[in-house]
Image: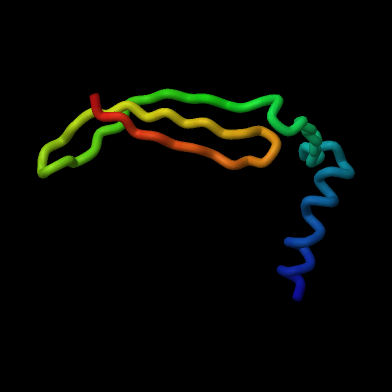
Length: 74
């Protein structure tokens, strides 16, 4: 019981004494269809038994969090 109490209480004591960072949350708001994150990169895959370097395209919509990933071997 003591171990559990110390585990639960320690973060509160550290925060009150200024020795621990206080958790913070910064809300983000995005309008539908307004912003997206895009990334490109190389991936190595095994295709027909041999290693092939392909190109990865990644798109993530900021509003919904839905993503599309495409791999191109050219």
